[in-house]
Length: 254
Image (cartoon, rainbow, N blue to C red; front, side, top):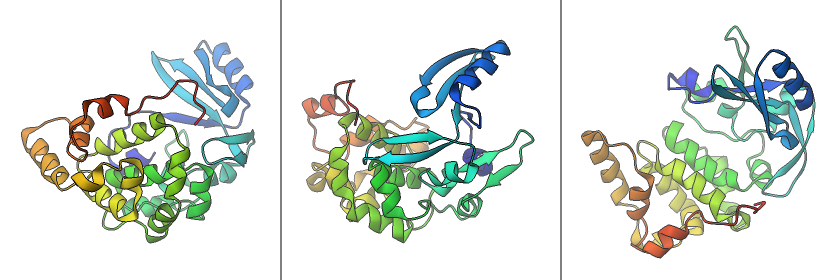
């Protein structure tokens, strides 16, 4: 919904449902579609339709969080489902006829190119510290001007929580951030908030000054954004370090 409103390509279509996962599977298979219980404990199944996968997730509310993952309960309340999400621009729903349902002010934020946490920024971050990196990642892709002041301060105050996350989850977010058309502004604010040093301490000495020029040159030459090339521009050359980024045992729950 967010990308459609921004006039940008829509890569995935995620579906929200009021039916329990097992009932969603039953209905989908009765209609002749294949299904997979990809995240059924969190209410998500995948339905294959027309050769394409669609994630269908039951409406949820958080009952317990530990800074990494949440335990959820299923429900039928659209507002509770919206309020458990991270940012207002990510909590928009569209009905079958295209009508957009906005319960948290996401449309106004999209129009202003403003990234805002839903409700209390610190509370949202404490639910999952990865949201600190997501704040800067979504700002790099969709934000304009300065980051939301409350969100930026909350990220700076709670940055130590990033140490709880697996390297795999951290790199996944950094890779998406570095794939933005020009991530230089987001990286600048990350550095100012102390977040960049928390996840890439090597960048403190190496700096991020080359990123804007690299992004500009890449655009002029028609290059596809290369997150690894951009990473090499902000941390000292270290082949061993590059290889270990993102590596973590697959059974990690972080």
